[in-house]
Image 1 (tube, rainbow, N blue to C red):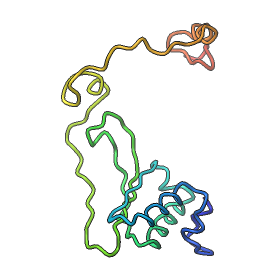
Image 2 (spheres, one colour; image 1 turned 90 degrees about the horizontal axis):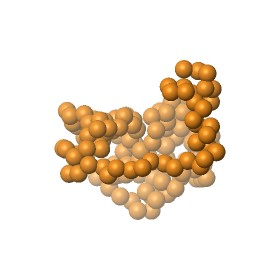
Image 3 (cartoon, rainbow, N blue to C red; image 1 turned 90 degrees about the vertical axis):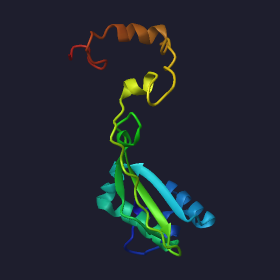
Length: 157
């Protein structure tokens, strides 16, 4: 994303136009909250050798926010039964004296069964479902794939 170049022209927010981050930064600038939090995929850290993330941090700095060190959080450590990883970009308005601390992870790890069955997370089971209904033409193709086979090449086991 060349729009996030923090070198060169140093156009900052105006150079980020046309990106989703521009809209995020524009709203943050307009609303002026005490703290802003953005999340994204883990890959943002290494995108364009880290220049994209540095550009985002630079833009938040330009509009009056100090960004705390970026951290990768795993949903599974926060009572969410999935292994999704996200980076958090937390900006604290420069005119307030607040130290942001990331939440501590939980000791208990939940799995898919915990998400589907009555227990600690939910007070009822997920209702039974007949599942997806495929058109007959697709079903006929899928029926050709042997058990544990691969739909693109039925010969691969």
